[in-house]
Image (tube, rainbow over all chains, first blue to last red; front, side, top):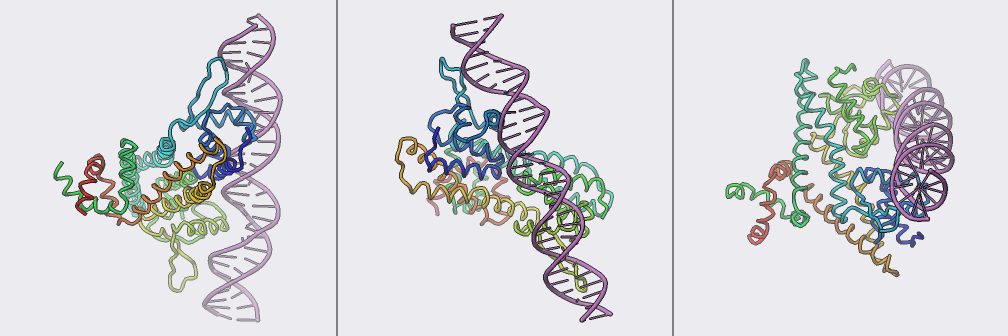
Length: 181
Length: 181
DNA sequence: CTAAACGTTCAGTAATTATTGAAAGTTAAA
DNA sequence: TTTAACTTTCAATAATTACTGAACGTTTAG
């Protein structure tokens, strides 16, 4: 496993971005490495390519599996496990998006639902309650929207995104549209 | 600054979520505190409420300003600075979203643009190139889409998000719609 | 000009998070 | 059943990130 400079560059970049995408540097590099290689890699190949310990690879793979970002391949007559990205680039991005929604939004939504049920017993709490309600409504809207997007086929999604500046036209015609349906 | 249990609960939760939203625990708490309080707070009030040092508040405010999440108020005849959220809940969410796009997507887009210009000189690089192109296209689509969403008024945005399950109908009618415009 | 009241900076330290590597677990061939 | 070829786990440690508090900077009132 000797990476060409171009590929190494990409992998290192994924490492730097790793923590911003929700994992850590090593796991970012692992994603980059798996995505950029046409063929599945063994844990040892990953350890060697990234110059990290075998144990670290094992933990990283475990984490990536919890995000559903990798799948395991087996070669007949070979006991090693071969790891590959679990789907296309598009699929992976979707999974990251979904998983982050679960981690970044769902817990707050749960908390807010509980808090809102309690009644306020001071002016400060009254205001706090209102703010919590706003946050709740926002997050709920985002969650529903995100569920809708997940239901679309990749083609529909691309189609929607490529609407671009005509999005506002769509919105303006929404009412007319809804009457038809 | 003595927080009621309910409010304290919310603030602590914001702290726990802080790092998932892109900052750290203290800064998460600061956002929570500012949002949940009807009136702007001074740095000392923040320090006291969150039981952190004055210096930490100063650094936190600086960070929040870089995200454009707080604004400063002044009271005539009072030298203290009063901090408040920079807009509605909706505005804040938008700013976090936008800032995160800058940090999580833009640097990768820049890298990929450069890498794609270079020609591949081996089969592995050929494949790598294709993958990078896919990632690039995906990120570019997301970036453009996000720019579109930023251009909408909050009302239009809400309206779009509330389309819910009729999103697919909108997409299916896209062609018809585009012909009209 | 001086002092008081504020804000900022940053070196040192504390807290958290990531990594290693050795030990233990698992599987299957011989 | 033994052994070899793997994977996993986790305590110790390294690396990173966050926080404190003292020193310094700035502004204004007296």
